[in-house]
Image 1: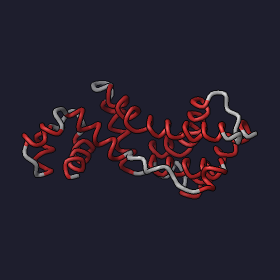
Image 2: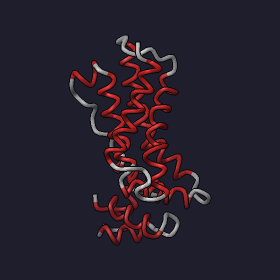
Image 3: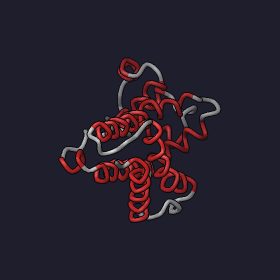
Length: 189
C-alpha cells in the first residue's frame, strides 16, 4: 500500500515527530481527507505500518514441522532472525529508540502488533508439542521468551549496533540451531 510505504520512508528519514499525515498523504499521492478517514492519527498509521512489516505468514504446513519440534523450532527461529535482521526492521528499532522519550507508546505498539503475535504463535506451537507429549514445559511463555531472547541477543542486537556484528546468514543459522538445542535439552521428553 502506497500510504504505508510513504509513512515508512518519511518516519525513517525525518523521524516520527517531524513527519505529518499531510506529508505522508502528499508522498503517497492520496488526499488528506482519504488518509484521515483511514488513519485518523499518526499513531494508527504507525500501527498499520508495523503490522504490515511484521505480517506473520500462515502457520507452516507439513507433518515434519508438527511432529518434530526441532524442525518446527528451527523454521520459526530462522524466520524470526531473518525478519529482525532486515535493514528496515533495524531502522524501525532505531526510530523507536530515538523517539521513545517523547513517544513511549511506539515501543509498546511494536510489541503488541508485531513481536507479541509472533511470540503467541511460538507459544501455541510449544503447547501443541507439549500436548502431544513431545516436550515437557511447565511455563510455555517463559520457554518462548527464552528461545527468542537467545536468537535476538546474538543476531539482532549486535547487528543493530553495527552492521556485520550479528554475523553472516550461516552464523544466524548456527545461533538458531544452538537455541533449538538448548530448548530441547531442557524440555524434550
